[in-house]
Length: 131
Ligand SMILES: [Zn+2]
Image (cartoon, rainbow, N blue to C red; front, side, top):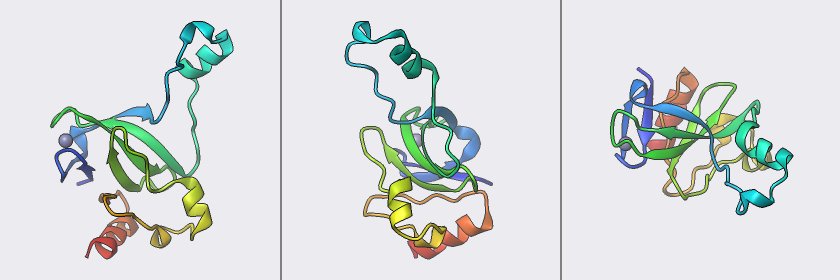
């Protein structure tokens, strides 16, 4: 079973309880009336689709029903951390490029949460990081 850590429930829960809601950290323009059509269109419709680290908005739909963010590797589907709304990720594509790009090189700050991913390497990584 694929498990995801909910930062509000503070426990691993089964993946079918969650729904992905798209890219995280998209700020609504302060003054929509001042936006050009292109700026407003970018805000409404265009999203990043990176190969690698991506920050996503998820909701614990069959649980606490709260929104939170996930840092996920889009290549391996490995979830590197989950964090509450209003918080910033501790793992970014830039932080990984400064360090080692492998999963074993990921450093998680205090408060960062690891979750069990779909691959065996993710499971091994979580076990190694948590224990
Ligand atoms: Zn929850």
